[in-house]
Image (tube, rainbow, N blue to C red; front, side, top):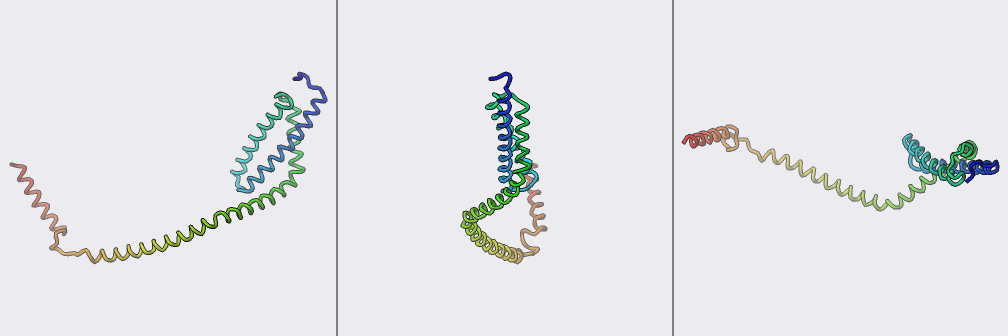
Length: 184
């Protein structure tokens, strides 16, 4: 471990950090391809940016552990940032066009794979839903018939036991009998 870094080791560390910054830019584009394969929403952009910052910070820490024995040096951080921005504004512009095309191809590939895998499941689901629809329609017709029949089965007659007037008379007789039993 050197306390005072020589100019050659500083230059070597700076150039390594430039290369590492380029590598971090490539990781950013790889995460962009993954994000574009699934969604383009603002929340997905935020989540993937947080993931990128987490990956970049851990890898930068590990890089500094190997190059400068864990010492934080400004020229290393500057080299990483400069390498990232060199990649982002030069190769990154080309990579944006490439990543969108790649993401579209990956989406179509996934779509074909899922179509191939889930086609039998889809056909089975369609058959089951058709049979279920027929069953539900039969059930609905039976319920309607039962509702019509129930209207004709109930008879309205004043002399029947379940008539409201008869219920009052029965209950009043029952109360009088119970009250006389209690008094004794």
